[in-house]
Image 1 (cartoon, helix red, strand yellow):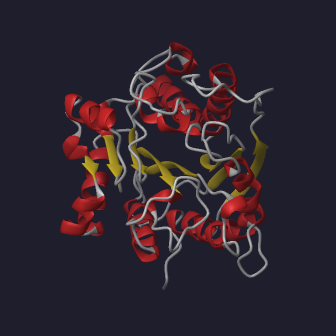
Image 2 (cartoon, helix red, strand yellow):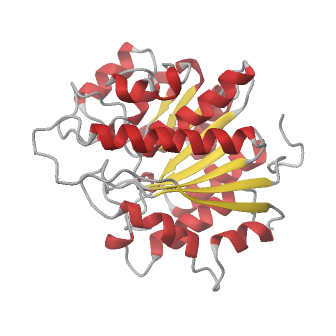
Length: 318
């Protein structure tokens, strides 16, 4: 149920780290998990800052990750499949348990491949309740490649396709069913770097009107696009999950991400989007990914990620 006061009704948060970085080609995103936890806004940790908003926080630590023993061959596609399936299965279990315990998951990544696990856990929880859920996906990339369309074999470019039931069965079958999401309840915001195969798939699945690209944001404004995204995801009676890739933000404001693309949203547009979602009150989990301290500048992106988490949880200017 939505909170009339424009903040999360569930005041019990489970903080879950997923330090998985081998789904991406650029190393270092696994370090973003603990970097965000430590925080650096006026010397406070992320947990302390969330508590200041009136939440009770239980840090459930990091999901156990099966790390590759060796570098994958360049032509392997998808890369690190076994390790990814095991790690995402544990992620799904951790997120499902948090929801089953009545807590709101705040999930810290890691690269965006972790969404295969986190969304699987969310889907399993709502499936057991007999309810649908929606999903708002903020990202510069579509992340809807399959092994057949991916040029790199990196799984962080495939999670949305996997969630929709497309791709290798070891990933699509996590939690024992597929697809995880009814495509009618999906909204994607901020895309500006899509592969040809992704574009074809989006059109063939009839999802064009549910993808709000940077061109759409330029023409219509962030407020209009996010309002419509919320409306789409809210069609699901269970509420909706949000996953936020920091590469949606222009590299001027968020240089510490592994797949930078010029022409992204601004610092204020990012906050506006998440403030709107917090005000709506229908969000049931929040995930932030692809923060890479190895390539950050003066901790700018880590600090921004912490600020965005707080905006998603209801922090406002006044």
